[in-house]
Length: 123
Image (tube, rainbow, N blue to C red; front, side, top):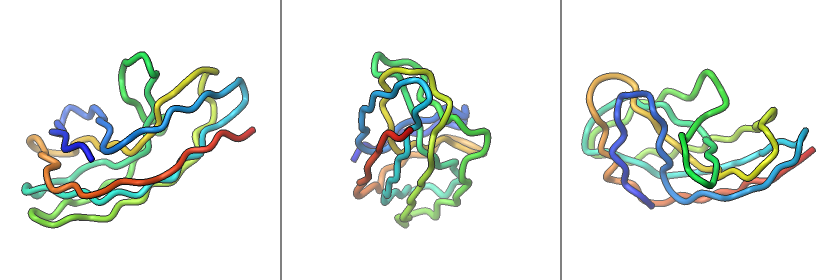
């Protein structure tokens, strides 16, 4: 699993592997993920399931509110975001767990352990 440096610029970064799915107009992506993350720094972070166009671009969450968690220095935390993403334009998307900073300073996610999950496309 990757160990990104999460900034407080409210920009999401993927944590762990991603899946690539293709959707048509009117379809939705329903992912369910679990991950064990941790940091040597105590911090608040927003956790979500995010999307990105496979060609690159911004990692984004289609929601206005993500889950706020408090990371305790030196401890791993089990996180299991689950959601359903309607209203995306037809196309291919990378989908996976993501985190963004919430508060002061950068967060080194350097105690990560594992990540697993799935994503399905439904009408």
